[in-house]
Image (cartoon, rainbow, N blue to C red):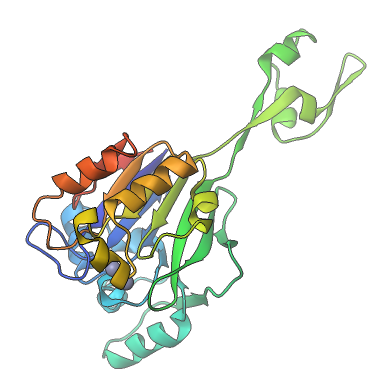
Length: 299
Ligand SMILES: [Zn+2]
Ligand SMILES: [Zn+2]
């Protein structure tokens, strides 16, 4: 299971209810932070999540509402005497995080490992045995990326197929599950016939950008699409001028990509209530909700 905690859901100006952008994705012991706006470390504290557990921070771009919190987290982790590496990934990370660590005065107790993402689209930018993160370039002012998190699929036994061999529960099935062929009562049973791959969960995070057809393929079949809806169609001109999605853009993408669920985020302070944005999106893609700070979603 993958668990998402929204730590910030505003765009440029934080409001009383909404902090700058940040989203924590948790899968078993792995904690991945996507964006790190100002005050993210305090949001983590309120949410009861230790920043100590975060090993990866993925930055979409270097507008402050997505990245002003990085200095604070880096410093606090030293104050709590972290010793293991923290990896920060995104565009121009080495140079910019280098400036941050040089600017503030503190004793660093661990390594900040920076990985610049500058790849042809879309590409795998980080992977473990259990999951893969892909990135795609999106069209915003500065260089900006969208991310997709995909769990590794798991190999399952095809019970009907195995019934032909009268083989139900046996330690030898473990070998098939590892993708190895086996011999059973003189017959070869191939893993490719006797097993199938159950796909893992896919979560896509898109902010900030204008509409781009490439995002449809990138988001295809996602279990959850988290997508900016900075404006509604009433402010379409502002969305175009500032290269942002409207709620309708987000819903159109969700619909074209055949995702299961859409959660809107990164709202302009012009919408004290985001209900109209949700309604606008719902008329195009029904399974839409709005993110709120500290909302937790299980996927
Ligand atoms: Zn933004
Ligand atoms: Zn931006």
